[in-house]
Image (cartoon, rainbow, N blue to C red; front, side):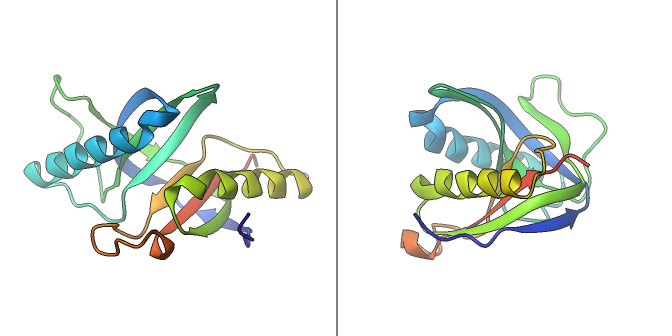
Length: 158
């Protein structure tokens, strides 16, 4: 397992556009690719400014299925989204968060999440919401998985 440096970070609330779906673990990559494409196209078509890399928030994980919100951080979200759109607006929470950086393939991201969970327990803290991953590196630009950088956030209870 990779060694992770975990820190406590104060983060600001961040508006996002996301698509939420319940998927099997084996379907995560396919869902993320599809969702990111749809959300980027939606933002572009509607003049919404994307202000960071795509992200995935894991709102519920049980057994082999997960509820995932996949999307992008934006400067602001429109008040009205098309009624037929599966894209919805949301906000990543502000406040304290456990934070680490994962370098390498996405298949190893559960190691980063486990390290963050262990750190939270060791620090006698409690999670304060759903964790998320921010995919800093675009695999299309850097195809070697060893070069992929992912930031991992877990909100902390105040």
